Image (cartoon, rainbow, N blue to C red):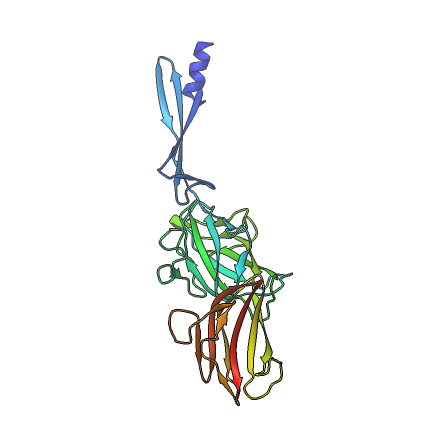
Length: 328
């Protein structure tokens, strides 16, 4: 039996085969081995023939890992952003879940089905300093039609989208804004191959995400409206309320701010009526006296009229201005 075994080995039959795998350096990522990594495989055989033994090796087979194109998108505005009269900052993260560095084309759709209003997109901005906060003039504006910088495998890029509210929006309406990221190399049905376009010179293959993903951020309109009413009361020189010469007319101006937002730079102004004379020192705001001079308080009054600067007034607030004139 021993001689038969030796004879078979001598005629080329392999008595024992072992295999080994060599992988050149390449980090492991969410989608596996990094694109462009060379996976090399060589088999070996050991044998005996009579009193002799030996080892032979096969040829080495080298496989270059293709790039897998995958992406994930997450809206980071977890509660509806309040949209008032100024621009609003919405936030997303784009994560490269593929195994090679990849740039992504960004599209923003403010006209999502079911919106109460459609916001206007002003800019798409990259959080270039990585501090997680929108810094105008510091963070990099992404020009229309320009892809993001290449994102490393498992890396994320934070994007800010600056939107503004249309004039047709009403208080309390809601809206969605959708951001879509698509691999710059290409997208499509999983398994789609872009020959020779992968990192490291291999092919690029579309992964399970189809290399394009979207997510929404929410908006809610927070607006204010202002109503102004005016009333007059009269005290005549005889203790009555007749509008005769010498009678004093007290005008009451009531500004009512409604809604969930705020009115900014709100002024109440009124001209002194012809045939009357302003009575100095009678200007008030919410029953508190104001000086007539242009000084540190909110009011200014002169023979031509009054101007009271209410500043920023929140919805649900009422402000009252009064002043007196005398009928000439």
